[in-house]
Picture 1 (cartoon, rainbow, N blue to C red):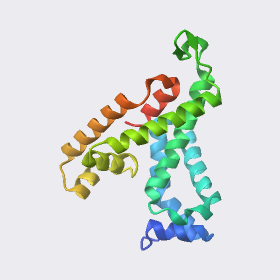
Picture 2: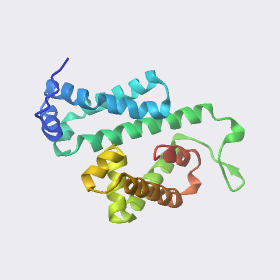
Picture 3: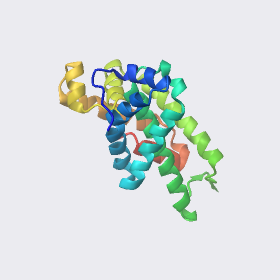
Length: 199
């Protein structure tokens, strides 16, 4: 088993990985694999698939290692990567198993769930998400990012920001309400899956 290198910051590990340091990659894997796996398992509810998604993310990181030199926060970077992997898996699973009479409608026409439509839906959702995130009150935005982007617990956020856990919960609840209110409702299945990844 690789040494976990507790003396190395994430940024140091990423820079070493960028220079083809396999041991640094193994250390990063040890540091984040379980967190990524647990996140995936929460949504796919299948240990085998969750492990596959986690391994896909880590493989993706290694294959793109030359681009890691500008990444400062591994937690945020990996969190976004596993979130996208889970989303894509759920979207594909939903589309593959969706009965014809369950297809979303726009006006009187059925929406054809082709990759093109869903790519557009996802791009629209991401733009709307980022726009809404930037519009949140400063403290609410900070709490939400620490929770969703950095995968920190309510207690950890409470300690970092010196606010109560109840206040943290309030900010997250408020942020989710705003997100649901502002994300486009016309994006059908993709929107439903995107919202699934927010709670």
